[in-house]
Image 1 (cartoon, rainbow, N blue to C red):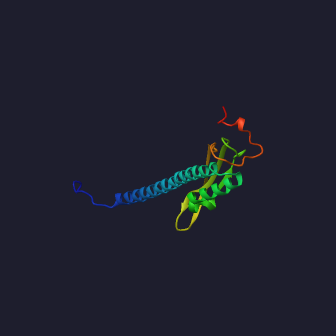
Image 2: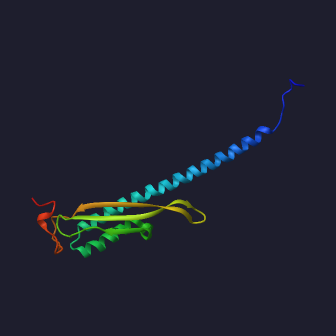
Length: 154
């Protein structure tokens, strides 16, 4: 009887465990990719919002009008992300050819659990952008604005 093949189920258990472990690795990898995409998506949204903020800011007639209109424009781009995004105006002086700067910061969960609406860890995404204020429009400049110290002079 030694020449007769054996038909047992000993290899089945090891194969079933390997399938379960493989499925777990696949699911964990997919979860990491989805959350990595959330960080990339947030960065792209912040870049777009910063660009729109500065476009609106640099075309305004006064600093107060610029800040209000620019924040509104950035909020329109960010949509539902507005609640989790901090917008910080870094502009030192307001006037023709002065640099306007903005910093936007948003927090993205490292691991988001969809059905529980829970998260694990936080990744902070920060975007800074700068642009020169329009030199060819009439505007109310700050008292500290020195037109001779701007990039457009000379």
